[in-house]
Every structure is written in C-alpha cells, then in structure tokens.
Image (cartoon, rainbow, N blue to C red; front, side, top):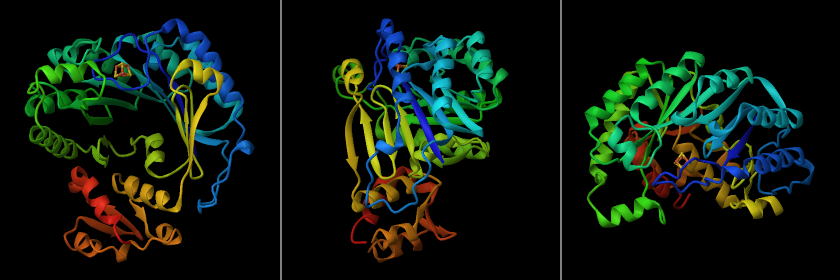
Length: 379
Ligand code: SF4
C-alpha cells in the first residue's frame, strides 16, 4: 500500500545542528499551504513515467494507508491548516480504514488545544522531537524547549494518544550513558511506545560545524557514542522495545508503518518543499526553495537502473527488520548466494534466513554499511 508525506518547512528558530529543509519565515505560511494543497489536487498518476526495470506489480497509487506530516515543525500550524491539508489528501486519495496518520511536533509549540484538534482530525500518532532531557545539551544544540517542557509535552501527548514516539540524539556534549538510560526509563514509564535514537551529525554550513572547529573535543568521540548506542539498544530490548531498524525501537505493534514503507521499497508520494517521492522504481524530489517550488515544484527525477534497484533492496532491507527477498533479487539478475562473503556471514550468524528472506542479525546493525558493501561485491 502507498503512503503520503507532507512537508511543513517552518521552524521558529533554526537549531544549531539543523541541515533539514526548514525556514523561519512564518509569514510565508499561508501562501505555502495554498501551493501545497494545489500540488496535492494536481497529482495525476497517469502523467507519471514508467520504469521498464521495475518488476514489482504496480499498485493503484490512489490507495493509501499512511500519512506523515513532517518538517520542520508541523505543530506550528493552526488546526485549520492541518485540517485543510488532510482534507486535500482525502479528496484526492482513498484513505483506508485503520490508516496511520502521524504528525511531528516540537515540545514548545504543542498545546492541549492542538492535541485535542489532532485527535478530532483522525491523527493517531504523535512524533515528538525531544532530543534530550538535559537542559545544558538542549541549550547547546539550540532547541527552544527545556527538559520540563519536554516532559510536559510527553505527558500531554500520552494523555490523548496511545501511539507516541520520541526522537533522541546520541553524541551530545557530556552525554553519560547512565543518565541517558535513566531519561529513557522516565519516558517509557510515561507511556511512550516508540523511540528513535539518531547520532548527532556535524553538517557542513551549520553553526555546530563552527562550534566544533573551535572546540574539537566538545563532542563525545566515536567509541563513546558506540557505547551509548549499544547500551541503549540492550536497555530498550530488555524493556520490550524491539529494534526494527538501526535507529528505531518500538513496542510490539507500534512500529512506524509509514517509515517501514521507505525500507520496504513501497511507494510513497511526497508533497511540499524538498519532499521526496518513490513511485514504482522512480525517485522524485521537489525544489528546496520557495520560489522554485512555487514555479516548478519538481526539480529532480531518477529512473532507477537494475543495479540501483538491487543496491537499494539490499541496503534498505538489511538495515531493518524487513530483510531481503532472494527471489526478487534473482529476478533482477543478482544471485546473492554466489557472493564471496555470503557463506561466511551465514556461518558467523551475521546473516540469517527465515521464510526465504535474508536478515541482518540486529547485533550487527552498527556495522551494516560494511556488510552491505561486502554483499554487493560479485553477486
Ligand atoms: S526543530 Fe527540527 S527542523 Fe526545525 S530547526 Fe530544529 S532540527 Fe531543524
């Protein structure tokens, strides 16, 4: 089934580490929402090009079972705007019963009125950008909320929603493993069902890059980060949060169905500034500045070759609980069992087989890049 992504590129202030497509010119909001709705209205699957290399059965693109409103900071929008956007999607697409509808929220812009409004609109999953529960770390990365606001927003979201997710960062200054785990323990006890832990990246051109240049030892080194990641993984697993992707953990049945589509090679249609789509073996990306988005919207299209489809299937499948499908690879002309490293990986239980699919042992998620590169040689 297909998924829809809607990008809301507005934030009150840019965080020090942010390289996402987000801007602080909130005065642009109304014009942008109008264009976003026009883009949804104008979607026409008949106008899309076909990829001859794509061997999966094409689906009816209008059937959808996930909507993800991401950003930026979607919780900056008024309830009315969110309602208009969801209505535009429902007018164009066939939203299935029991669909997953997620909205990303930041603690400082989430209010009870908004949460109640989201629920009325049929949104059933909230993803909170918490990042840390330590005030000095939140200040360092330039977040607008502090730890008490973070906890209040979690409490508020969990009061109205069963399916609440929190994002955290690993690799922040003076981050201590024990403290980090205590913070996770706290949010689990509040009812959070899904946790994402991303490594802090020092992106080019961000204020963080300058800070790190002047104070090279301010961030924990790779070994410290790996230790926090491993202990976090162990802790979450002990608490029945299953790792279903390198950075994602969920209680049974609370995996992000939308994100699983990315890793499973299913279609997703992205609307909005810099939004990406993947439709039947073709990747699309929208323009990443307002003027170009308003004028032309789509900026980039790539028809995947057989080699790219193979690479993508192995890469995404091995990083998540989706795994890889031998039959699919063989139809594309790739025989993974002929790979010179394959037998060794099976013998060492790095890769295991279940129901004709190959999976990476989650213990090795941290070195998945290395394993993927080895599996792409000589198949
Ligand atoms: S809230 Fe998220 S998108 Fe907005 S500036 Fe911070 S990191 Fe970037």
